[in-house]
Image (cartoon, rainbow, N blue to C red; front, side):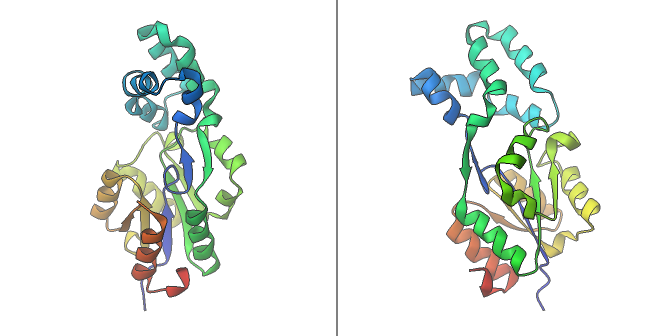
Length: 206
């Protein structure tokens, strides 16, 4: 009998298409300037601090002082955040729905700001299918910190070895593996679905 009972999904890049370029492409109307801004001003590292619990107001104030020439664009990251959401990935959502219908526990473990997560909750009804969600911004801990994986397992009574964890970050996958999770690195949904079906021994997930 297969031991897999639960499937844990990352959100951004796996279930939800989030990309700040959706907001900034028309604002800058110049891809090179947009990429400079996202690489040097509102960087991924800066955004990660909001995912760890820092408020957007604090993050914006910090950058406005350093980059006054980009003050308007920096404020847009907070005020226009919803425009960074490009939609759901239908095939990934279909896998979640199929897993739920076949009796697996389905959970979310996401690096996401506590301030903006309610926007995603209201926009994507499929999130209501999940049996539990751990949001980094609420916990003030983010993947790949092993403590946030332990929050997930302890809060919902899960055993890592009975879970498949799907994420598009190799660092997060490696952290989960060290804790005993079965893992699938997300790149394309077809391959991911085949891997999940193989790990569960359940062709009904295909």
